[in-house]
Image (cartoon, rainbow, N blue to C red; front, side, top):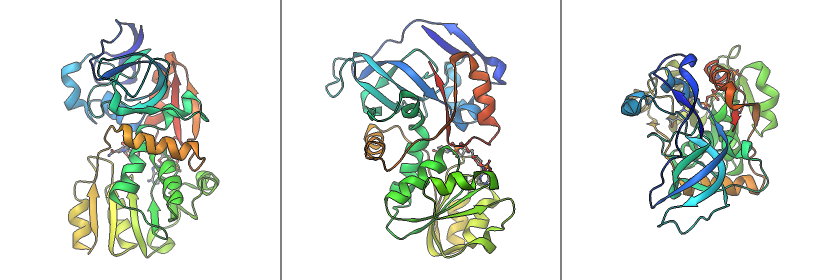
Length: 313
Ligand SMILES: NC(=O)c1ccc[n+]([C@@H]2O[C@H](COP(=O)([O-])OP(=O)(O)OC[C@H]3O[C@@H](n4cnc5c(N)ncnc54)[C@H](OP(=O)(O)O)[C@@H]3O)[C@@H](O)[C@H]2O)c1
């Protein structure tokens, strides 16, 4: 089968097409013919030797990627809830090895959900790691409530655009930061207010914030704490830039958490429900072909991606 091998950690030149044997599935796994996969900043960081590279070193040369949508072609002996022919999507085995940049992947049945019928395979692949992160941050950590004033940083990005929509579904009042170019996009997906982080200092633009989703880290955490109410909660997700969030929040009379998204078929199912009922919609800004993998990585590396990008297999 076709796959993209990462020969060694480094530049995009190390991502090369290859022909490799089909994966072998275990009893609790399914074999999925991949129709589309998506790429996240963690793919790019790991490719460069950061991110989760340390955990994956033993697999080098490896196949990167976690986010897939496709069709089940075989099921392991213990799998009872999926069958051959099911269209599924999910974030496989994160933060371990998943080898998603391939024509076929082996996936634990507990990491996937049935693909909503009202979206394409490309849109489904886009609604995995980023959507699960938004769900786990907004629902599990921030415990969003009706009427909460939620500040979402990088609201136009992969995680941000799902977080805005999920929080709106739960009845929060959502304020999103983006550059001026993405104002219309963020208001269009349901944000109540927009802040242009290039021109509007946060403490002049807003206040009395109950909850914050920080996707930037560093000084953005300090700036966010200044606009939060006492007892407010901030969750920060960019690892390597958020180690001090709990201590800083505590010193300010607030609560700070870090989190790392987990593969979860159950949470993926929650995302599927919200997509099916039309409450959330993935936004894809560009679809790449399998042999444009290097270009796709460079797009994510630019830090300017709106919504998600995906690769068709
Ligand atoms: N801990 C976890 O489990 C976890 C999971 C997922 C992601 N992450 C991390 O979270 C971060 C965001 O992920 P993502 O997938 O959403 O990234 P992304 O899709 O690549 O984010 C791109 C967006 O970021 C915006 N942006 C860039 N700098 C900004 C700033 N200073 N203020 C506001 N917006 C800014 C850009 O909008 P403009 O062009 O308008 O600036 C762009 O739309 C990454 O560091 C990623 O590694 C962590």
